[in-house]
Image (cartoon, rainbow, N blue to C red; front, side, top):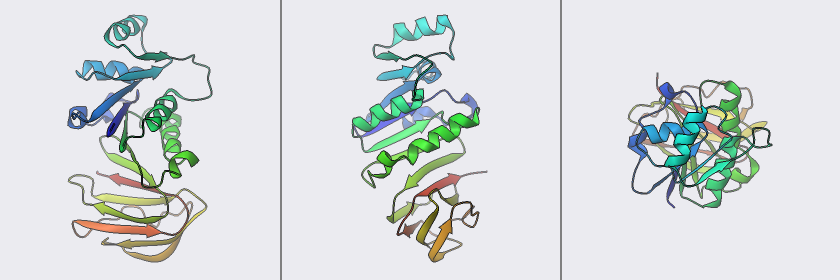
Length: 218
C-alpha cells in the first residue's frame, strides 16, 4: 500500500475536498462517524474502526450494509478509535498516511491526534513513512532529527515550528524569510511561528529532539 487515508469524525466544515486525495493508490479507513462521511461522499472504505457511539442506530445499520470490514469496539477502552485505525495503518507499512477529521470540535480529540504523530513508535520510523494530519486550513506533521526538504504549497504559505521535546538542538532554517542557524528551540517558544519560504523550496535540519511542523493558510 502506498497511501492510507484515515477519516475520523471531526467537523465536516473543516474537511478538505476528500476527492482530491481519492487516487487509485489510496486505501481509505473510516473511523466512527467518519465511515458515514466517506460513504456519503461516494468513497468506499476498505476497513472501519470505532465504537460508533456518535451515529444513530439507523446510520449504524446503513453503514453495516455498505461495508464488509467493520471493526466494532466497546466505548470503554484504552485506545481511541483513531489510534486503533492508526496502528492498523502502521502495520500495513505504507509510504504515506494522511489523517482527516482529527481537528476541530473537541480539543482533546485534536490533541490526541497530534499525540499519535509524536509517539515513540512513530518517531522511530524516521523518514521511512510520511504521516500528516490535514484539514481545510492546516497540514501538521512531526519530524525526527536530520535534514528535511520542504516545498512551497499553493495555499498554505505559513510554516511554523514547535519543539515537542524539552528542546530541539541545532535548528537551522534555509530558504526561509526568517532563517536560523544552529539554534536551540525550547518547548514553549513562539519564535518559529508564521515563517515563510522565499523560494520554491527550502530546508530545515536539527540534531536532536522532536519538531512539530504546521503549514497553514488564513
